[in-house]
Length: 470
Image (cartoon, rainbow, N blue to C red; front, side, top):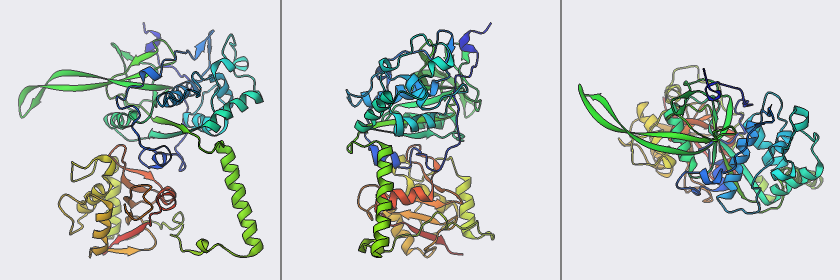
C-alpha cells in the first residue's frame, strides 16, 4: 500500500504562460534594480526557512501553496540582509484573500505580483489561522479589513520586493541545466520551485521527466554526495567518482524537509529579492505619480506648444513594430537566423575560459563562425566593444537602421553611462537570441522592448544593427 507521500495530489499550484513583461533571469532587469551581490555564498537557506507550518489543518486543505512558499522565500530574502523590521512570519490567510486564491489554487507569479505591488505581508498574529475549517471561514474577511491592508502596504513603503523566473514555465532545459541555473541563483536569492507532490523511491522523492507539477515549495539547499560508479570507457570498465546533488525543499506538509532525487525535473522556478525603499512610496503610488506627471507634461506642452530642447534630440526608433517578416529568400541572413534558432538551449562559446556572465560576444561569434562568416579569430571575440569594432571594419556586414530577423543587434560596453555592461544577440522574429548570463545557454530572454528599456533608457547605450552581405 502506498503511503501519503507516495500519492500525487493537487495542492493548489496553477501556472499561466510567461508574458512579455515578466522578468527572466539573465535579462539584467532585476540586477539593475537589486544589484548582483552574492548574499549567500554557501547557497544554503536552511536557517532562514525555520518556519514550519501546515497548509492543511483541522481537516481543511487551503490549496494555498503558492502563498505559503512565496512568503517563506520573501522573508528569507529580507532576513539574510538583517532587515529586522520586516515581517518575520506572514499570514497566509491575508495574502490568500488578497491574491484571490480560489478552490483550484493560485499562480505563483500572480501571487508575488499582488504582494509586491498591492498588499505586502502582515504578521501571522494579525490574521492567524485558529479553527477556521471551511473555505468561507478561512478566506475571510473578504473584502479584507482596511486596517490590515494598510498594514501590509506600510511594509511596501519601507521595502521593495522583486522577483524573476529562473526556469520559465514550458522551459526546454534539461534537468541538469535546470540544476545549474538554480545553483547559480541560490547565492543571490532564495528560490521556489514547482514539484510533483509526491512520489517516493527509497529515501528520495522522484518525478518522471516532463510530468506535470502539483505543488509550490521553497528550495533551501543542495546536499552533495560522492558516489563511486563503474563505467565503460574505450571498451574498458573503470571506476569513477560521480558527484550527485540532492535538492532539499521546505514543504508545508510533514516531513517539512524533503530530499529530492538528483537532477529533479522542476517544471519552473522563481527567485525573490528585497531591498530598502528609498522613496517611501508603494509601487501603486509610484505608478500613479508617473502617469500623473506624464499627463501633466502633455497638458503643459499642448498649452505652450513647445518642447524642451532634449525632447527634440533624435532617438533610436521604436523597435516594437519595425521587425519585418522572415525574408522569403534563403539569403545568408535567413541562414544565420535559422542556425541561431537551431542552437537555442545550448551552451555556446569557443573560449571556455570566459565566464557565462560575460560570454555574449563569444557565444554570438560562435554562431557567426558556424554560419561561415569569414575573418573571425578561431576562438571568437571576447567582448562587445571588440566585436563592435570588428563588425564596423568587416567586409561581411553592413550597418543598417531597421532590424530584420537574422541581423546582429549590438549595445556595446563602454558606449553608455556606465550603469550596465553591454550585450549582443541575433534578432529573431519575436525575441532576441543571445547568451543568458545566468545559465550560460543560448536563449530568448530578451524582447525588443526590454532591450530598448534596459540598454537605451537605463544604460544610455546606443543600439546598432548589422546585416550580413549577400
